[in-house]
Length: 280
Image: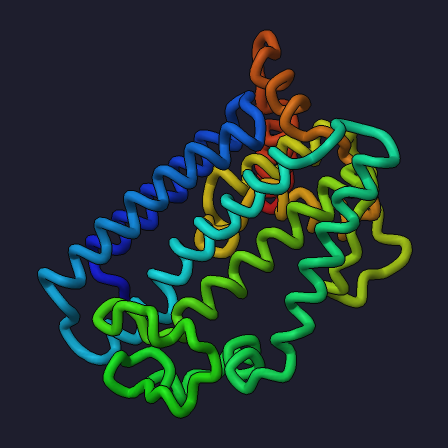
């Protein structure tokens, strides 16, 4: 689906702000507070846009309630989760710290388990589109298909109910990655992404891999730039079975390098150009 220009601009604004904050040197609590304020404002703006302009056709309406609004609301729920979890954490290290985050992860898994039998959960996770009109067009949703009384409290002109469920799924995914990184930031997480050969290793320096990860993240070439730096880091650590530690501090040290700061990226370019020259 092709997003309207105004929604593209709004989502780009969110991505840009997230990138700026992730590259900064402020706490997660501060980052979350800033993003909560931003996302609340964005929700007000897109609601007003829908009220004034409506949708060009059913496809645009489905796109909005399946992708645009849930992405914004999902991130708002996620950052609120992070803010709540971080501000109620009793300690900043040690066994009690780990136990606290393990408890939060257990609660998240219990909540997710309660959704597994939902027809809509399976529909959304499978990537199907055949019933999108039933789930994401406002006039199509009927109270008889909804088991949650929250449906009756919604603004029927600004929600189909299922857009809220998608937002919750998105928030859960982000929160899951965040909790894993808090429980054990030094241990790669096994996402079961691929049948990875046991002998696949990163044989360069850790700083070189961190430089590559940030280059891929900042360029926005993975998942249209929607993947966060923490999640991307965990994926690479899992892929290469390597622990990168605190990548943010490592990146800030790179910024303070004298002379060339992108040593590994420059090395990659030089190696590729040398190889190309051999074929001439």
